[in-house]
Image 1 (spheres, rainbow, N blue to C red):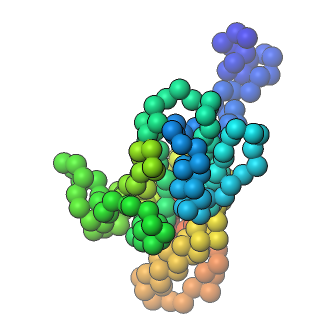
Image 2 (cartoon, one colour):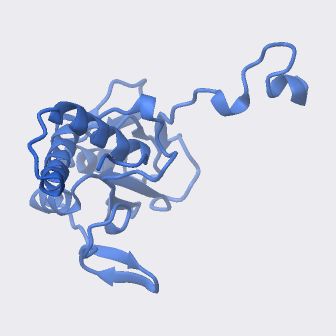
Length: 209
């Protein structure tokens, strides 16, 4: 294929930036498959059907899964570092700790590096916590409630779970309360306001005022 065709030339080939690809699976390097399986099931991750020799689990609300098995990768066990996105990092950490997972203290990213505790302004992308599986693979939990512009297309806005949707509704309700305070009027059209606010959170668009 010529570069012209790859970019949508006379042949009618779609442009490369519009090629739809979805991240499906991340392979984790582990030394003991049974031990890793038990650990991730303790996190509440769903055990999926797979061919023999492959273990696949999916976090609740995630469109991407993890796999491990004896012949899937030559990477050293424990060498992976992966992000988990949560809408409420305090709740997520407390839930994991209650399940017996050793989660590090909450911290946030400051101008000079990590700082202990939650971000005082509760900004999206800033507050974090880490934990490791039995092999040492690192999981960094990051609280995201509002996406940076362009990260998610507005037309593709979705919620991966009922808890994510509930969290978005609570944030929209709080923001709408401030909106009514500013206008000094009751907004009977709150469903449209909520919907616009919730889409703007995911797409990074300017929220309603």
